[in-house]
Image (cartoon, rainbow, N blue to C red; front, side, top):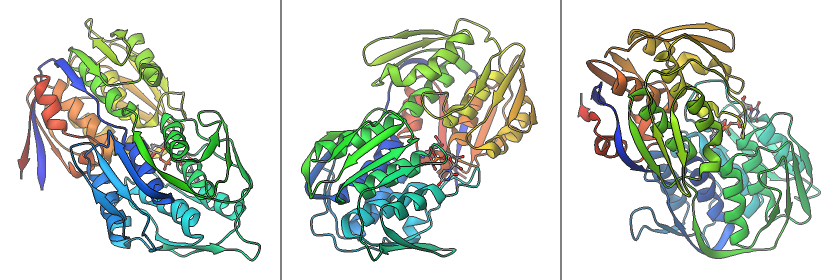
Length: 421
Ligand code: UD1
């Protein structure tokens, strides 16, 4: 198994270009199966989650072409399959978007329960509630979710989510775009990738309004046709490089970002003492010395993202004073990395949903194990900031979500290599 070997202690300096957003790409690629015609999608990140989704689409009859890096041309016109390969589906979380997309296109689907990062119990009851409201008869087993139209057939409807869920909002949008009537999703998630999915579908002929607010309205259309779309930059990848710049005492220009999407992250890093300068589509982040402690609570967008919890925890571990980090989306997320950070010299006390992080003057290298994607990213940041050598194991998690990580970090001066163990 490959590992990352990091010789830390070098401030990151230079420019990094952010790739297309993982969480938008993993919604937009399954959405392409709703389209009759060819979709040219640009800014597609080359990460393992995307590669698996493309394999699933291809195995179901999609015609794929990747004429240049970051560009995928997908034509699902001839697709007839309603059961994606279960072994591939179990490899990632976002494969649950095939449930909504297949229901929307064919009126039926048979999809294995998804895999992916298991940092918490991740129920899909709100997805199922939405599908049922749209008229699906749903059969759930321990391994599959099977859907077909109920006796009255599928049609648009009002769905009020009990919890703000990115996945359920996306899945209901996918299921609803081609149904007769209007669907209204209340208490919808507002993340940038929800807006990106709506923009993609609208570009292909859908009628979706309100994406980015808590009420998304979808007026069903008979058909979507092909077109061109470019995916937004990855908010979390950008946030990860910013946290790495700050944790290593560096100075980095982060290019290809939407600064507005970054406000929830940059405001906290600025509060901790980093100097942040926003430009049109890039942000410069510069360390100004020792970080200050902070209080952070994760929340759905536009709050501080749970997917940045672990990375900011590393900054807190290096700040002066005691920081307070509260997780309100996935309570058990601390267990994916806090023990590993402690083996590098961090001091973290977890009390329920809150971690009290006692800042130290520095961390030291150790052999640590990634337990999920963002936990792995945090261990890489910790390794970059630490004195000595850090070995990060289980890096397949990290490779699910960060395109050309080694190349980008090396260009910033990091001493990191991927080693076959
Ligand atoms: C998505 C992101 C993930 C991010 C998370 C929260 C993708 C592919 N993944 O995951 O990176 O960490 O949003 O921003 O976009 N919940 C239920 N029932 C449901 C669905 C969710 O109770 O049916 C709960 C979850 O347990 C969690 C909260 O709602 O506490 C938010 O989950 P959700 O937004 O659905 O996360 P994901 O879509 O799985």
